[in-house]
Amino acid sequence: MYTVISKDGTPIAYDKVGDGPPLVLVEGALNDMATTMPLAALLRRQFTVFAYDRRGRGASGDNAPYAVEREIEDLASVIGEAGGSAYVFANCSGGSLALEAAACGVDVLGAVLYEPPYFVDGRTLPPNYSQRLRTCVAEGRRGDALELFMRETVQLPGDHVDDVKGGPIWPALQKMAHTLVYDDLVMGDSSLPAERMAHVTLPTLVIDGAESPEWARSSVQALVDALPGGRRYSLPGHTHFLVPEAVAPVISEFLSGLDTAPDRCTTCERL
Image (cartoon, rainbow, N blue to C red; front, side, top):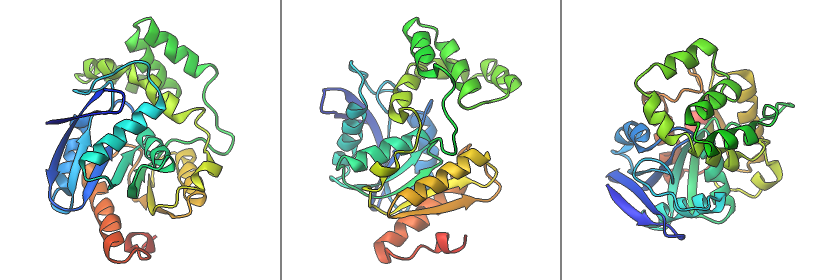
């Protein structure tokens, strides 16, 4: 375990494994380093993999006030530890954070994203979702914040939510529940900022699960269309739930291909 001090003085905890070009893993909502390390272990033979706890999670600090700009600085600090430039893999809302960092000039060499949850085709956040989420967190009702997120944005069936509440992971999720507000701020109104993405020119592979809901798959295609260097890969038989064993080979092939033949992606050619 290592620590880097971000620009505002917040300690950001990270781990690194492997040998090769630097690759930073950016987690999504309700994830911390513990959930990203299994993927790091699968990529360590091809890359020096940096997994870190986003602020407010795990062993990282959480200096107030929160701002998306501070999270971009956190990612830049980890990339600084990697040598100043790095590849990035980002899951879910972490994908939006990675793209915003690249748009702000953070030196991302290439990126692989897994289903950033932008809304397209008229889909919007539930009424007053952001305010209700903030109220739950401000009042210390972290369990209510989790339920709100799971039922109204993830749209898990009620019995699935009840299963999670009764399972062993619920206490760990409650510890991170306040960071749902952070991810909400990263996503804004969840609409796709197509004009801003048009300025993100790095080679980017955006993955969707072939069995994910149609809105999520449409979102991935819209993002790929907006990114000048965007390419898409649909993972057969998979959903929004990230399976490291399935995703690692796709990441490895795409990013390794950028080192040898930037204009050729055999993963994408198989679509």
